[in-house]
Image (cartoon, rainbow, N blue to C red; front, side):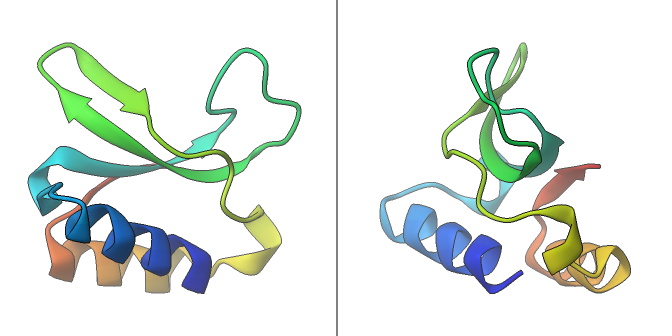
Length: 78
């Protein structure tokens, strides 16, 4: 879960705002062979992945992550 939070922090330092980010679960692209959590940029048509898989399902407590993301005003789709 720390990898997700570190990636969020890095993207926010790059200029992304919390309302532009979404944490998703699945395959970030058709070419991905690994399923897991990744970051996407929200836009008017949906979300575009901006990271590869950051960590697997076994590394995250869903309820804890949702609470943190809600506090940070970051969308989630998992």
